[in-house]
Length: 186
Image (cartoon, rainbow, N blue to C red; front, side, top):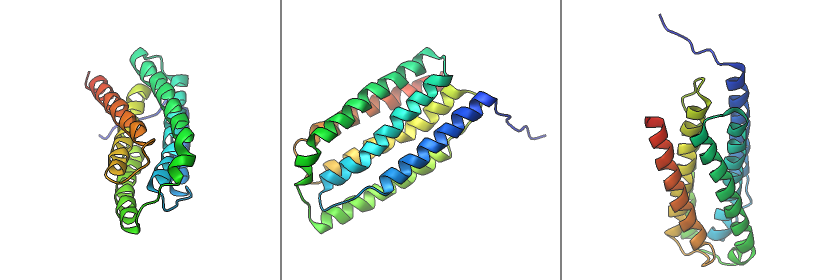
């Protein structure tokens, strides 16, 4: 006989808020005003991505007593708040650097592939009554998306002020993915 997972009320509340945040992130990333500056485009699409990670982390903190996951969530809030501020600090300057239509087309094509995979994997992440595990299964593809989006942008001519931000995203998010995969495996 097939056993149906019955979600606790706290799990339902957690998941309801997660899906609201996911939908807001998708809308923010897809409706960002794009220009002929790849650097600008990265920033205006990554900010809603980071804001969603912060909100998802705040969401899990409301329901999760697990110390390692609380630590991960608190780190995400700290790191991505700083990253948003760093991007806002260079946005005006970076928006002045333009790219060729060919580079913009190639960048956007790969960006759409990355985000489609990320949105799908986050939306279809396995859910059960373990909120800690749910959060990590949702956040791993989110972090991987940020890594791939940053690597994609680094393939092109970008604003010099944006490069260290992208490199920091890659390093911190790879570390986060490793830690979450380790915890899920325990």
